[in-house]
Image (tube, rainbow, N blue to C red; front, side):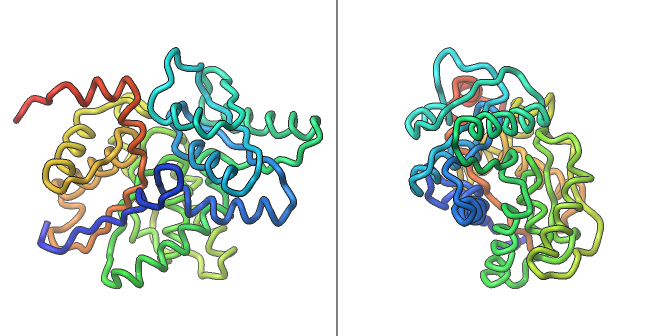
Length: 299
Protein backbone atom coordinates (compact mmCIF):
# COMPACT_ATOMS: atom_id res chain seq x y z
CA UNK A 1 0.00 0.00 0.00
CA UNK A 2 1.04 3.60 -0.49
CA UNK A 3 2.83 5.38 2.32
CA UNK A 4 0.35 6.78 4.88
CA UNK A 5 -2.55 4.84 3.33
CA UNK A 6 -2.80 2.25 6.12
CA UNK A 7 -3.41 3.11 9.76
CA UNK A 8 -4.20 1.01 12.83
CA UNK A 9 -6.83 1.99 15.40
CA UNK A 10 -5.38 0.60 18.64
CA UNK A 11 -8.48 -0.58 20.46
CA UNK A 12 -6.25 -3.30 21.91
CA UNK A 13 -4.96 -0.50 24.18
CA UNK A 14 -8.20 0.42 25.93
CA UNK A 15 -6.69 -0.68 29.24
CA UNK A 16 -9.41 -2.73 30.96
CA UNK A 17 -7.89 -6.06 32.10
CA UNK A 18 -5.49 -6.27 29.18
CA UNK A 19 -7.44 -4.15 26.71
CA UNK A 20 -9.64 -4.83 23.72
CA UNK A 21 -12.59 -3.48 21.79
CA UNK A 22 -15.19 -4.70 24.30
CA UNK A 23 -14.42 -1.77 26.61
CA UNK A 24 -16.36 0.52 24.28
CA UNK A 25 -19.42 -1.75 24.34
CA UNK A 26 -19.21 -2.34 28.07
CA UNK A 27 -19.28 1.40 28.72
CA UNK A 28 -22.85 1.45 27.40
CA UNK A 29 -23.91 -1.99 28.58
CA UNK A 30 -22.75 -1.42 32.15
CA UNK A 31 -24.47 1.95 32.29
CA UNK A 32 -27.70 0.27 31.19
CA UNK A 33 -27.23 -2.41 33.85
CA UNK A 34 -26.68 0.09 36.66
CA UNK A 35 -29.53 2.36 35.55
CA UNK A 36 -31.86 -0.63 35.82
CA UNK A 37 -30.55 -1.56 39.26
CA UNK A 38 -28.96 -4.85 38.22
CA UNK A 39 -26.44 -6.47 40.53
CA UNK A 40 -24.92 -9.16 38.29
CA UNK A 41 -23.51 -9.06 34.76
CA UNK A 42 -24.14 -12.27 32.83
CA UNK A 43 -22.56 -13.16 29.50
CA UNK A 44 -20.70 -15.94 27.72
CA UNK A 45 -18.50 -17.04 24.87
CA UNK A 46 -15.81 -19.46 23.84
CA UNK A 47 -13.06 -20.65 26.18
CA UNK A 48 -10.70 -17.86 25.10
CA UNK A 49 -13.38 -15.15 24.98
CA UNK A 50 -12.03 -11.61 25.31
CA UNK A 51 -15.53 -10.32 26.04
CA UNK A 52 -15.86 -12.66 29.02
CA UNK A 53 -12.54 -11.46 30.45
CA UNK A 54 -13.40 -7.80 30.07
CA UNK A 55 -16.96 -8.19 31.36
CA UNK A 56 -15.60 -9.79 34.54
CA UNK A 57 -13.17 -6.89 34.91
CA UNK A 58 -15.89 -4.29 34.35
CA UNK A 59 -18.09 -5.96 36.98
CA UNK A 60 -15.24 -5.83 39.49
CA UNK A 61 -14.57 -2.18 38.74
CA UNK A 62 -18.25 -1.32 39.33
CA UNK A 63 -18.74 -3.50 42.38
CA UNK A 64 -21.09 -5.92 40.61
CA UNK A 65 -21.23 -9.71 40.59
CA UNK A 66 -20.50 -11.53 37.35
CA UNK A 67 -21.49 -14.91 35.92
CA UNK A 68 -19.90 -16.12 32.68
CA UNK A 69 -20.88 -19.12 30.58
CA UNK A 70 -18.37 -20.94 28.38
CA UNK A 71 -19.47 -23.04 25.42
CA UNK A 72 -16.83 -25.67 26.10
CA UNK A 73 -15.55 -28.08 28.71
CA UNK A 74 -13.09 -26.73 31.27
CA UNK A 75 -9.41 -26.97 30.34
CA UNK A 76 -7.20 -29.40 32.23
CA UNK A 77 -4.74 -26.53 32.74
CA UNK A 78 -5.94 -22.89 32.49
CA UNK A 79 -4.02 -20.92 29.86
CA UNK A 80 -4.44 -17.63 28.00
CA UNK A 81 -7.61 -15.71 28.82
CA UNK A 82 -8.75 -18.43 31.24
CA UNK A 83 -5.86 -17.55 33.57
CA UNK A 84 -7.07 -13.95 33.65
CA UNK A 85 -10.67 -15.11 34.11
CA UNK A 86 -9.55 -17.07 37.16
CA UNK A 87 -7.77 -14.00 38.52
CA UNK A 88 -10.83 -11.78 37.97
CA UNK A 89 -12.94 -14.48 39.68
CA UNK A 90 -16.43 -14.36 38.13
CA UNK A 91 -18.71 -17.35 38.61
CA UNK A 92 -17.63 -19.58 35.73
CA UNK A 93 -20.11 -22.01 34.18
CA UNK A 94 -18.61 -24.60 31.83
CA UNK A 95 -21.61 -25.67 29.74
CA UNK A 96 -19.86 -28.16 27.47
CA UNK A 97 -19.42 -27.95 23.68
CA UNK A 98 -22.10 -25.57 22.38
CA UNK A 99 -22.60 -23.68 19.14
CA UNK A 100 -23.23 -19.92 19.01
CA UNK A 101 -26.92 -20.03 19.77
CA UNK A 102 -26.41 -22.80 22.30
CA UNK A 103 -24.24 -20.41 24.30
CA UNK A 104 -26.86 -17.68 23.94
CA UNK A 105 -29.47 -20.06 25.38
CA UNK A 106 -27.11 -20.97 28.23
CA UNK A 107 -26.66 -17.27 29.06
CA UNK A 108 -30.44 -16.92 29.30
CA UNK A 109 -30.62 -20.04 31.47
CA UNK A 110 -27.98 -18.65 33.84
CA UNK A 111 -29.88 -15.36 34.11
CA UNK A 112 -33.11 -17.18 35.00
CA UNK A 113 -31.28 -19.19 37.66
CA UNK A 114 -29.91 -16.01 39.20
CA UNK A 115 -33.41 -14.49 39.30
CA UNK A 116 -34.61 -17.58 41.20
CA UNK A 117 -31.73 -17.04 43.63
CA UNK A 118 -32.95 -13.51 44.31
CA UNK A 119 -30.42 -11.67 42.16
CA UNK A 120 -31.11 -9.05 39.51
CA UNK A 121 -29.02 -10.10 36.49
CA UNK A 122 -28.22 -8.11 33.38
CA UNK A 123 -27.79 -10.56 30.49
CA UNK A 124 -25.51 -9.60 27.61
CA UNK A 125 -25.31 -11.55 24.35
CA UNK A 126 -22.03 -13.03 23.13
CA UNK A 127 -19.59 -10.23 22.39
CA UNK A 128 -21.95 -7.62 23.82
CA UNK A 129 -23.53 -7.56 20.36
CA UNK A 130 -26.76 -5.78 21.25
CA UNK A 131 -27.91 -2.40 20.01
CA UNK A 132 -26.83 -0.93 23.35
CA UNK A 133 -23.35 -2.41 22.99
CA UNK A 134 -23.05 -1.35 19.34
CA UNK A 135 -23.58 2.27 20.37
CA UNK A 136 -20.01 2.15 21.64
CA UNK A 137 -18.85 1.79 18.05
CA UNK A 138 -21.06 4.58 16.78
CA UNK A 139 -19.07 6.76 19.13
CA UNK A 140 -15.83 5.08 18.00
CA UNK A 141 -16.68 5.84 14.36
CA UNK A 142 -17.18 9.50 15.20
CA UNK A 143 -13.90 9.51 17.14
CA UNK A 144 -12.15 7.92 14.18
CA UNK A 145 -13.44 10.55 11.75
CA UNK A 146 -12.12 13.26 14.06
CA UNK A 147 -8.73 11.55 14.11
CA UNK A 148 -8.51 10.66 10.41
CA UNK A 149 -11.10 12.53 8.37
CA UNK A 150 -10.02 10.94 5.06
CA UNK A 151 -10.63 7.33 6.08
CA UNK A 152 -12.38 5.44 3.29
CA UNK A 153 -12.49 1.91 4.70
CA UNK A 154 -12.30 0.31 8.14
CA UNK A 155 -11.31 -3.37 8.31
CA UNK A 156 -12.56 -5.24 11.37
CA UNK A 157 -12.82 -8.86 12.54
CA UNK A 158 -16.39 -10.15 12.64
CA UNK A 159 -17.19 -12.40 15.59
CA UNK A 160 -20.66 -11.60 16.87
CA UNK A 161 -20.97 -8.65 14.46
CA UNK A 162 -21.66 -5.86 16.97
CA UNK A 163 -18.50 -3.87 16.31
CA UNK A 164 -19.10 -4.03 12.55
CA UNK A 165 -22.73 -2.94 12.97
CA UNK A 166 -21.84 -0.02 15.21
CA UNK A 167 -19.16 1.21 12.81
CA UNK A 168 -21.56 1.03 9.86
CA UNK A 169 -24.18 2.96 11.83
CA UNK A 170 -21.64 5.60 12.83
CA UNK A 171 -20.05 5.95 9.38
CA UNK A 172 -23.42 5.81 7.60
CA UNK A 173 -22.47 3.28 4.93
CA UNK A 174 -21.75 -0.43 4.57
CA UNK A 175 -19.28 0.50 1.83
CA UNK A 176 -16.93 1.95 4.46
CA UNK A 177 -16.54 -1.19 6.57
CA UNK A 178 -15.07 -4.55 5.59
CA UNK A 179 -15.74 -7.30 8.11
CA UNK A 180 -13.66 -10.47 8.18
CA UNK A 181 -15.64 -13.45 9.48
CA UNK A 182 -13.72 -15.40 12.15
CA UNK A 183 -16.21 -18.28 12.22
CA UNK A 184 -18.25 -17.45 15.32
CA UNK A 185 -21.73 -16.50 14.16
CA UNK A 186 -23.44 -18.34 11.30
CA UNK A 187 -25.82 -15.53 10.25
CA UNK A 188 -23.62 -12.43 10.06
CA UNK A 189 -24.95 -11.44 6.63
CA UNK A 190 -28.43 -11.02 8.11
CA UNK A 191 -27.54 -9.84 11.61
CA UNK A 192 -25.02 -7.08 10.82
CA UNK A 193 -27.30 -5.03 8.51
CA UNK A 194 -30.26 -5.50 10.86
CA UNK A 195 -28.23 -4.45 13.90
CA UNK A 196 -26.65 -1.54 12.02
CA UNK A 197 -30.07 -0.16 11.08
CA UNK A 198 -31.42 -0.60 14.63
CA UNK A 199 -28.31 1.01 16.12
CA UNK A 200 -28.49 3.97 13.75
CA UNK A 201 -32.12 4.55 14.75
CA UNK A 202 -31.22 4.32 18.43
CA UNK A 203 -28.43 6.88 17.91
CA UNK A 204 -30.72 9.23 15.96
CA UNK A 205 -28.83 8.70 12.70
CA UNK A 206 -29.97 7.95 9.17
CA UNK A 207 -30.23 4.30 8.15
CA UNK A 208 -26.92 3.16 6.61
CA UNK A 209 -26.68 2.94 2.83
CA UNK A 210 -24.71 0.52 0.65
CA UNK A 211 -24.27 -3.24 0.70
CA UNK A 212 -22.73 -5.26 3.51
CA UNK A 213 -19.11 -6.37 3.02
CA UNK A 214 -18.00 -9.53 4.83
CA UNK A 215 -15.13 -11.81 3.83
CA UNK A 216 -16.13 -15.36 4.77
CA UNK A 217 -12.98 -17.04 3.44
CA UNK A 218 -10.45 -16.52 6.26
CA UNK A 219 -11.58 -18.60 9.23
CA UNK A 220 -10.33 -21.93 7.91
CA UNK A 221 -11.72 -24.97 9.71
CA UNK A 222 -13.63 -22.89 12.25
CA UNK A 223 -13.57 -20.40 15.09
CA UNK A 224 -10.20 -20.25 16.77
CA UNK A 225 -8.60 -22.79 14.42
CA UNK A 226 -5.17 -21.57 13.23
CA UNK A 227 -4.62 -20.95 9.53
CA UNK A 228 -1.48 -20.39 7.47
CA UNK A 229 -2.86 -17.02 6.28
CA UNK A 230 -3.35 -15.92 9.86
CA UNK A 231 0.18 -16.96 10.80
CA UNK A 232 1.57 -15.01 7.84
CA UNK A 233 -0.41 -11.95 8.95
CA UNK A 234 0.86 -12.27 12.54
CA UNK A 235 4.43 -12.57 11.31
CA UNK A 236 4.09 -9.59 8.95
CA UNK A 237 2.69 -7.28 11.63
CA UNK A 238 5.17 -8.40 14.30
CA UNK A 239 8.29 -8.29 12.16
CA UNK A 240 7.60 -5.10 10.24
CA UNK A 241 5.84 -3.00 12.88
CA UNK A 242 6.29 -4.71 16.23
CA UNK A 243 2.50 -5.00 16.26
CA UNK A 244 1.17 -8.08 18.05
CA UNK A 245 -2.06 -9.51 16.65
CA UNK A 246 -4.02 -12.43 18.05
CA UNK A 247 -4.72 -15.79 16.37
CA UNK A 248 -8.51 -15.74 16.76
CA UNK A 249 -9.68 -12.28 15.66
CA UNK A 250 -7.20 -9.62 14.57
CA UNK A 251 -4.81 -12.05 12.85
CA UNK A 252 -7.56 -13.39 10.62
CA UNK A 253 -8.82 -9.85 9.99
CA UNK A 254 -5.34 -8.80 8.88
CA UNK A 255 -5.25 -11.85 6.60
CA UNK A 256 -8.49 -10.56 5.10
CA UNK A 257 -7.01 -7.12 4.55
CA UNK A 258 -3.93 -8.62 2.88
CA UNK A 259 -6.10 -10.76 0.60
CA UNK A 260 -8.30 -7.79 -0.33
CA UNK A 261 -5.22 -5.79 -1.33
CA UNK A 262 -3.66 -8.68 -3.28
CA UNK A 263 -6.93 -9.30 -5.13
CA UNK A 264 -7.44 -5.61 -5.94
CA UNK A 265 -10.53 -5.13 -3.76
CA UNK A 266 -8.52 -2.53 -1.86
CA UNK A 267 -6.49 -0.15 -4.00
CA UNK A 268 -2.95 0.91 -3.22
CA UNK A 269 -4.03 4.45 -2.31
CA UNK A 270 -7.23 3.60 -0.44
CA UNK A 271 -7.20 5.22 3.00
CA UNK A 272 -7.65 2.19 5.25
CA UNK A 273 -7.88 1.89 9.02
CA UNK A 274 -7.35 -1.55 10.51
CA UNK A 275 -9.26 -1.87 13.78
CA UNK A 276 -7.12 -3.85 16.21
CA UNK A 277 -9.65 -5.39 18.59
CA UNK A 278 -7.13 -6.90 21.01
CA UNK A 279 -6.95 -10.50 22.15
CA UNK A 280 -3.25 -10.90 22.93
CA UNK A 281 -3.90 -13.20 25.95
CA UNK A 282 -5.05 -15.94 23.56
CA UNK A 283 -1.48 -16.17 22.23
CA UNK A 284 -0.55 -17.70 25.58
CA UNK A 285 -3.12 -20.47 25.35
CA UNK A 286 -1.25 -23.76 25.01
CA UNK A 287 -2.49 -24.55 21.50
CA UNK A 288 -1.44 -21.20 20.07
CA UNK A 289 1.82 -21.00 22.01
CA UNK A 290 2.95 -24.24 20.36
CA UNK A 291 1.78 -22.96 16.98
CA UNK A 292 3.76 -19.73 17.36
CA UNK A 293 6.85 -21.60 18.54
CA UNK A 294 6.99 -23.57 15.29
CA UNK A 295 8.91 -21.47 12.84
CA UNK A 296 6.96 -21.06 9.60
CA UNK A 297 8.44 -22.12 6.30
CA UNK A 298 9.99 -19.07 4.62
CA UNK A 299 8.58 -18.64 1.11
